[in-house]
Image 1 (cartoon, rainbow, N blue to C red):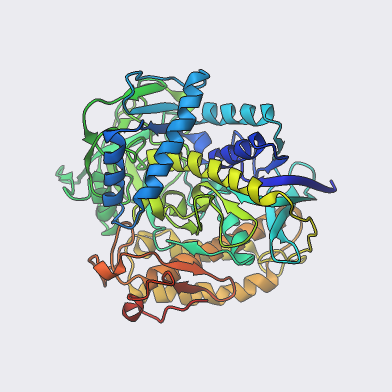
Image 2 (cartoon, helix red, strand yellow; image 1 turned 45 degrees about the vertical axis):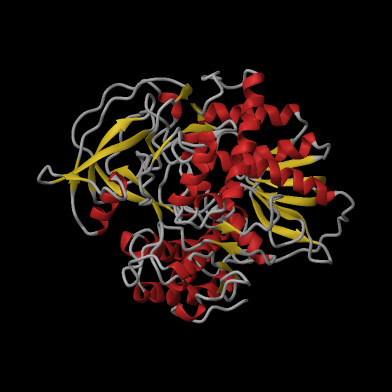
Length: 579
């Protein structure tokens, strides 16, 4: 289809990518957006309800910032959280005035807005078209392109809707908004969340942060369910009927811990009801638990609250827990603007009552609901590579979520704020840049396949999906995983590839392997338990570890603390390096 040119290229068509493209277009830039599927209809958000937490200036916002910092194991940054809430309030207020979403509480207090993920994405797609953004659906990106100075200046890939013909876009700056990595665990809508953007960025020198906080799990029914609204789990009990509860960590953490310890737990389903709209809260409520083990906190309509991540899923199987499910629609969404992992889709609001015991299992959500991702260098959402910006779940969210995975309100707000900042930052950088772009070769991009990508994916899943591998961690199990995953990478670089659909699958396999290696190396380096990172051989928090670990490298993985924070190096299982 030839070579296209734009001022800004956005890779990824979910909420964060859409907001980034809108920000760039409204700044007067020519914008092209490429999406792996169809922008507005694919990804986790399309399978869930969206929950947006709107905090006007005032005491409620201050309290939300304080609680987010405490819940995140004190690894967050209150200034980032303040800015995210302010940006989200500004954008939602604009949507209120235009009548795009229900306003709800007009008293000026905090509001939780809930709407169908499909509707939300549809509104964003229409806004993109009105703003003049060129949308290229079914155009998965395979590699980033750089100029002679090492500046990211475009991307290339295949068009799956046109016989896998090659495409290339040259741009003054690129925004990555490709989402996180769920390791093909079966989470609803996460089949496109294979970590492609993380690998593309690392291949051009991008750094990551917080990859040890990648073990976020959701809970899902074992047997398929009829079409229902997104559900959330309310209570759990074991075979004797005794409830499963952990006063410090909440019911979802208790259920996951029971699963990790080989226990069986039973439950029932409750009926859904309600509809879209805004739900004001005038009294403190319990922060919803997302399965990450985060402590419950009594809050105002919480930044973290607008959507629990313990969403049920109808398409997965396995052994495990039986749980009591409360239907979402009248109570708050398990979906969110950054991509929910709930059942079926939000269009089924008002489904009939379901009853009886339902067995569920733990489903790894990885970095989609975890914290790790590309390291950002400032509030313009620039990465460590010139010309490359990032937004949404592909980025590290430690600044707002700390050591605990981001739940609905946080992730939805981050998608809006980071998208706006990345799009604006990319426009500023793009002006005056050249367009000379040499070709690059990356993992999984060989012309001839010498290894089946299913073998790579199978080994990655063996070391990531089981609770014994990711929920509970120890030096022994981590070293075992690292040895096998690292040994496979040279084979992947030399023998993984193909043409057409085979090439896309090979690239996904390479990305899954790369993400798994970064998470395991980072988890081995952090010799404590904090948030969703749980070490059986280091069960408590250590004050000296209240810092963020950076990682990167493709052929050889490196892990290092920030340049000015080296006090934890002596406590590591292996020497930290600077890369």
